[in-house]
Image (cartoon, rainbow, N blue to C red; front, side, top):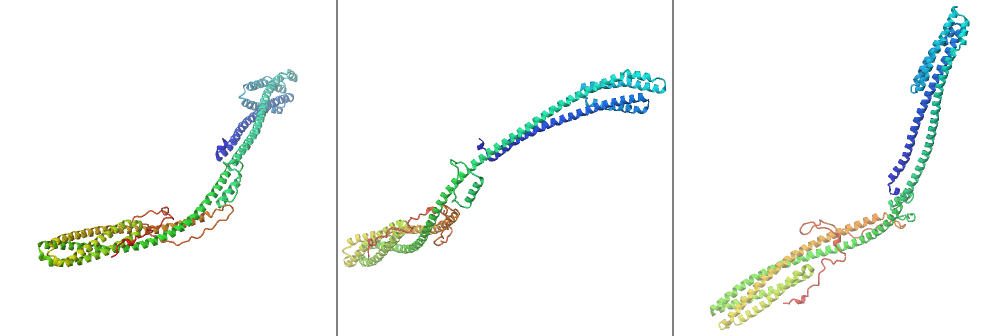
Length: 562
């Protein structure tokens, strides 16, 4: 239980226990000293009573001496002790009575002495003095004085007063002896208690000090200087020292320091390895980002060329549509004229010539459309995944161009036949009318094909717009990737410099290698919509193929040659 307490609590408890013992000793000593002081006071009080009793008895002797001297000599000078003794007796007896006011028995004895002294004066001393005065006056003789002295009346009073005063002294002496014995016992008990209490306090202090020291040594696992030395070396990055602990010690501070050093060695080693790998990976990512940026630039140039080709295709398709409408109008008019009569043969022949010319134009348009479809397929192959839809549209356009070319060839053949057989037109009106209707149908098909081409071009335009946006995103992403790689390289270098602070296994700190590669300028991280895009180095993979890597190009042999 004591080991589970805090250090401060242990110290407070130990010192409090010792202090409590000392306070108890101080209290007992104070109480006993107070009692000794009181006993000393009462001893002094007893000595005062004895002194006053002795003084009163001495005053009685002075009274007796003065009266005896005056009785023998008759001279008043011998009465001086008598008068002095009378006054002193009253004073000392009054003090003795005051000092013994708490003792009724002593009061009785002192009152008896006072009464005896008064009777002694009135019945023995004063009559003897008066008799001496009569002797001096000649009215009495010395024989009377001798007879009075022989009567010993005064001696009886003196013996009585001496006896009472002796009782007073005996009682006070007994009280003094009792108080002295009690004081001696109290002093002996006080000395014994102080000695035992001091020994107990010393033993408790030693025991508590031993328990606290043992608890601290268990918690520290060694001397505090050893713990400080280990912590200091760790703070200086030195992880090469061996932390020694006692056997089966797993809870002390030294054991925790030992575990911390081993963990730090493992962590620092792993961090150093990771930092080196991160530095190499950042260089590879930087190179990939540069390649990606270059590919994005090339792709942007290809998109611009595709856009220009689409503009030309749009113009050609518009012209083709207009020509188809004109051809349709001419065919309709030719059919009406053929139905009206043979007089329209000349006009029909002329119209057939015009049709032949237009068919040549259509043939040229179909050829150009086929070339444009070929170029579009090539560009779609370059665009890769983003150009798949565009490749499909280009294939459809190529098919339409082939159909238009075939139709144009057929119309050309019909027109040639119509020119050669112009002379037979009159006889073959019934045959020409279906041909003219066929021509009208073909022209309508050409018009429909032109509309389909227009729709396909619109889809191609949309695909080109999407491809342009993708190209911009690729360019932005490549710049972001380059910036991220540069930042990763910087962070890896800083991490290596930080980890170089620690020394592992007696090795000196290894200096970090300078970063390789060039810095890639960064720009605000924006997408094509102008909104910020989240940067994340984890979104890039070193083994990912560049964005510009496309499928194999189309086989150009599939396109018809004109």
